[in-house]
Image (cartoon, rainbow, N blue to C red; front, side):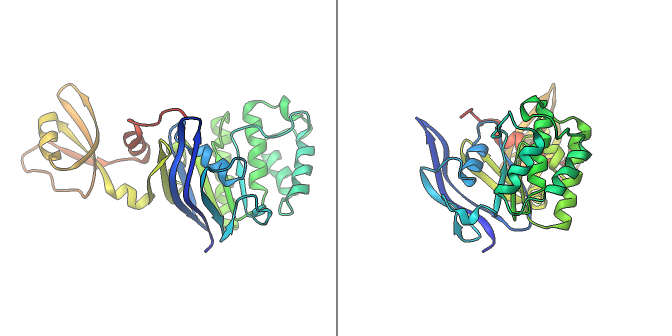
Length: 288
């Protein structure tokens, strides 16, 4: 099976459970949104996938190969990390060259081309770059590796609006010309909502759901109006949250839509991905 398969993975730090019996798969050829609040377990799972840390229990397979300390998967998966894992004393151009030595599939010419698009000075040392340009350097590395699975962990930290838009454009161009699995772990959900095909939502170290964006949006909706009317309409329904302002109320509902009662003033609207994420995780998300 061409996929990243995560089976019953758990990880604890002292007395804190970062991941608890996590099982899911990322199939080949899709763009995933890996969503969760700070401390939800996203980076822990990504680092286990990348063999930077190891699970206490469970296994990860990449295209059927066990990922644990297995050099055979080296050129199958690359994780762009939020953490700075590079020698700050080296220049960008030298880091590009070293990456080419470690990865046969690294396209050095493409890396320089991406650096030029972002006005990244390749003669600068990594530690001399701003936070935004350090992120741009990491993006250039990730986009220039011809691996079947690429993970972006908070990819646009420090980037201004123009640079974020350029990154998303380059990502889509890359995906269209070389279809592979792209996993975007982010809290900027509104920005990636139109890119991703499937959502994996993690909270407090557990997977809350894995759904296509289309199916997920069909499951949720909003109903608004006078609070008493909203409450009557919502009786027996799966209400995941509410907002109130004076006598008005907005309820967030999971489930099939039902016709509004005659003679009332209720309104139904779509629930966006950002709002769904907030309402599903607002009671969790403790730092880990």
